[in-house]
Image (tube, rainbow, N blue to C red; front, top):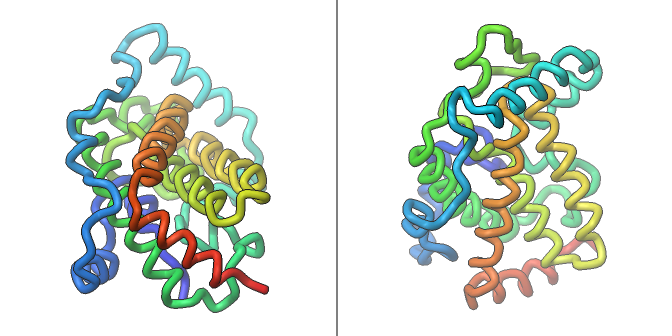
Length: 228
């Protein structure tokens, strides 16, 4: 069974019914209260018709002009937004994924998904293909708002979490998260500033996670479940 990172798959919408059911079944409080992200300071996207917005669009169109079919194929894989699609044979856990590991990431998925959604709803930035007819995605069009990028938020956050579990591989996980984030620009479903905002979110959410004794305790438990 693949670990689904639902808030990425839905572009920042609420987590999957399975994740919600698990969260309530466990009756555990969130690692991070998502309500904080409804009002927390967060850099806004470029204003419509601003020079920054024009530059953002220009980068999307430049990437569209230069992308190859192989790059689009890779972007379609990571658009699947699941643990297998993101990390593949670089996962530090055994296959099939242990149930405790699934539950841990689902709990993070639920908490972070609500926080990303709060930010998307605050800024309500249209996706580039909805705002500009010249943008032609080569991946499946995502629903919902564009800023911040849910996939980028997810990839960056989970790379940081995996780095907490295996610090020696942190750089490797971050590099992969960067590749996943760029796939969203290559695919034509996000601006570069959406991707950058996803990293800002991932850093902010991770900083809050590190204040949670429950999270820190679960990280220690995850270390015991790593592949030998």
